[in-house]
Image 1 (spheres, rainbow, N blue to C red):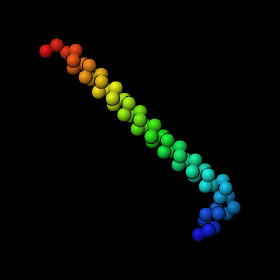
Image 2 (tube, one colour):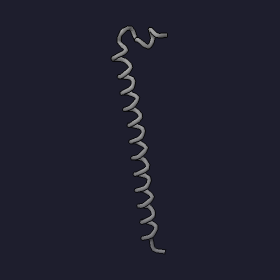
Image 3 (spheres, rainbow, N blue to C red):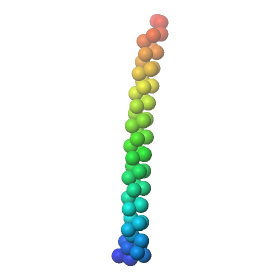
Image 4 (cartoon, one colour):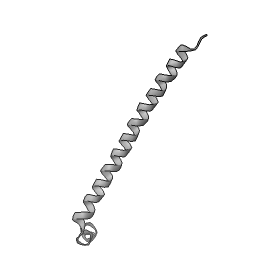
Length: 56
């Protein structure tokens, strides 16, 4: 098991790269979610303005 964690002597390169990749992927998910929420709010605002302007 320790050999797995040592990665054949390359653990100093492998584990940080896994960590950096995971951090970037998490940041992408968070940024995408924030963008989705922002665009959804913009759409809701535009749709509410459109219904207010329609004549009855």
